[in-house]
Image (tube, rainbow, N blue to C red):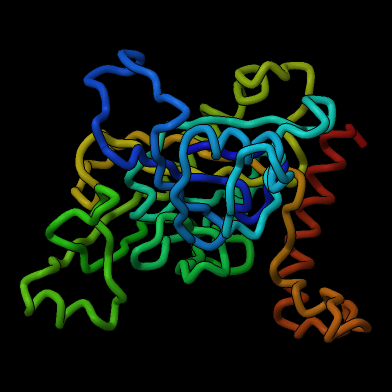
Length: 306
C-alpha cells in the first residue's frame, strides 16, 4: 500500500499488486523495473487501473503533466503527491498490505485518552477500502457516552468465496445473496469475533501513554480530538478465526486533522443547504453532540490545567 500524506477519504491511497505475480521468496531479494506492470486499486472508490512502475512514479511526481510519462489515469485525483516537498506535506508512505482489511477496520474515536466509541467499517463486496461512499458497511459501538452500553464483543457474519479472486483475496458477497451462494457451493458462511473491550483497554492503558514518544513527539500531548484505524494483522488467511489472546492489531492511520461529529451533519452547509445551522440538528442528535462536546471541553481544560 502506498498513500499520499495529504489525502482525504482514500484519494491517493493505492493498493498495489505486481501483475505477473512472480514475487521473490524474501523481501529485498529483487527489485521491480520501470517496465514491470502493476494492478492498482484506489481506496476512495475501489476503481482499478493498470500501469507500469515508471508510469506510477511519474504520476506520483508529475501527475497528468503532459510529456512526463504518466500515461492516462482514471483517478479522480491529480497525482503530484510530492509537490512542494516535505514542508508542504508532499510525502508518500508505504505500508505492508494487511489482507484482513476485508474483515473490516476499527476506528477508535478518541478525545485525549477517552474512547467515545468504535466504528467497525467493512469494505463493500469485491472492494478493499472501507472509506465511506464506496459501499462499505459501518457498525457503531458506543462506549457508554450516549447510551448505557459499554464496549463488549462485536461479531460480523459474512458469506465468503471458497476460491481466491484474481487479486489473491477472499472477498465476501452481498449479505442478502449469501444463503443462495452457499447453496450453490461457491461461498461459505464465516463469523468473526472482536473483543472491543479488551482491545480498548490495552489501547488506552498501555499504548496511549507511550504513543507520542514512539512517534518521536514526546514533548507533544496526545491530540484533543483524534481517531486511530486498526486492522487485524494476525497470521493466517482472511476470515479464519483467531483466539482473542492471539490477535495482533496494527494501526493503519491516525487522524487529527479532519475529525468531525457526525451527529452535526444536518448543520453542514452545502450548495443545496446553504443556510442550515445548529437549529436544524434533530433534538436527539443535538443531545448526543452536546455530550461529545462536553467531554472535549473537560479534556481540554485538563490538558491546559485550568
